[in-house]
Image (cartoon, rainbow, N blue to C red; front, top):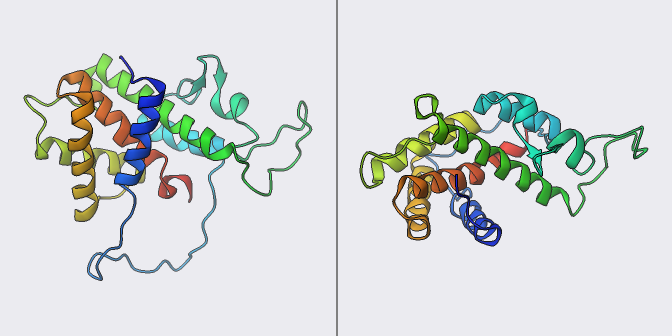
Length: 204
């Protein structure tokens, strides 16, 4: 699958994150307060295991930096909350995230989504996220994609406002990616990245 250039991909990824970021909701849409409001940041291993289950990709195949180094165990182990007592002499997780942590987290999310979309294109019969539109992508196609993404990544239904924002984002990105099957797959990738790198996906 042809991927957008690095600069274009990162630009569109930022647009994706902004486009689908949570907005102020009405009293009717507001979720009830949690009885246990404590949240914790997922370390790299927990995050990848969650995505491995979500996207049905074996853990050791889901994310490899430069196609060689496991994203959690090797490439971004320390900055994503892991420890390395033998080589780096890091015995405890870092107290605070480093400047590199958000970048590493985004790279993992982008690689995982690209992995899943590539598998969907290679075997449409077993596709989980990317399903090509029969004709020109319309609102029904965008809503179906949004539902699949929210169900898989956040494990909940999208609200009306979230579906509207995602549909607007996908329609806007279409001007850059085009309406072809390849363009639709790139839209799917960026929408996936927006949710997989969201605060809701990063914490538990």
